[in-house]
Figure 1: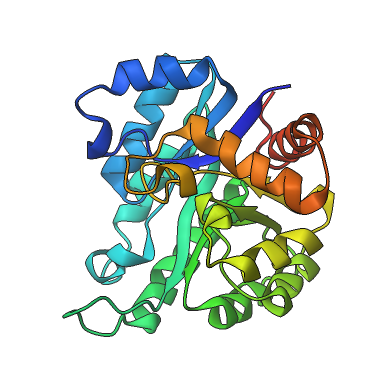
Figure 2: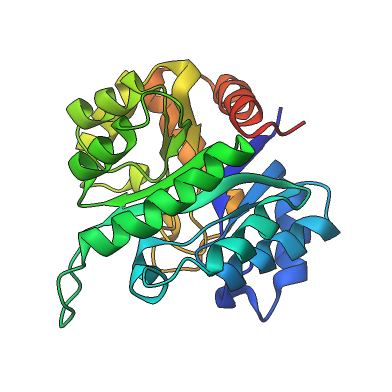
Length: 260
């Protein structure tokens, strides 16, 4: 059984020089790739790619980095709703909260992010779609926001970098936990400790390509096929073989995102 990359961005500029070649090369190795949107344009572009290729799927949403642009008006929701209703859109996301402060940048406005977040949650509920949750330096606030929906919202916390206690709270809400190439980084033993405890029916793997290349290719452009390196690390952590990792994570992806 081949692996599924549940979170990539093949529509991003990093692939402009050779996108078709990358897609062809990667789909020889993988069963499916979900291209995840971060704003209206990248969401529409993800759908465009998915329409062309059977094994590509799309997720649409507004990343919290863009909350400043979108929170003042809800007009964009009509456009987002049209995108969500398109064939091969399997999720709403990535959406969430991000309190990471970049150098020479102001502290992110959590209240504006919450406004944009909850508007999109309403669409996920309307269309009965899973949510791909982005979270950085804000796991506790994100939990509080999701908890309000009393189990009606389902989905995955992508690129998990929190503690086991935080992961356990998301699991109690019925959410999946997904790991990227940072699972392989030498100094991220604590993430591997969390991954070791995640139940097999709630674990997913991804690349977040072109970002977060796994340890052996750090500094290079990431690609979905390198999810194999994440899978290999997970196999070591769980004392599974690669076939078992592929079977479990692909089945979980299929069940969550309704991928054939």
